[in-house]
Length: 146
Image (tube, rainbow, N blue to C red; front, side, top):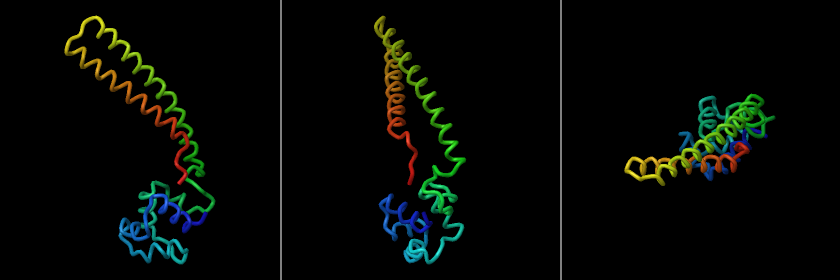
């Protein structure tokens, strides 16, 4: 995919007009139009700004062989390693949260005091956030391929 097509696709994926993108990059709308038509190329500074704005690498933008950041070999390896760690530590975090929650419930049943009530509330919040984190991760297993 060509740079011009990538700029168009990324801009539209963000719901921006050429004018919106031009404002964010502090360039004219005509410059964006020329980049998208393939009659001009962004300079190195604008290319870096595009990569930051769209959360992609400059390598992805420039290399026509890449249809997404995931096609870049070093990023593909890093994403695989990160997925493995997320699964491992996400499950561990959920297990620890459940154990923490069960301990808090056991103390709560015995006798409740202000400190134990605070401890219980913190346990519930911790378990909930861990569960939400794991749920969101499972929904987003595949990295963005903008």
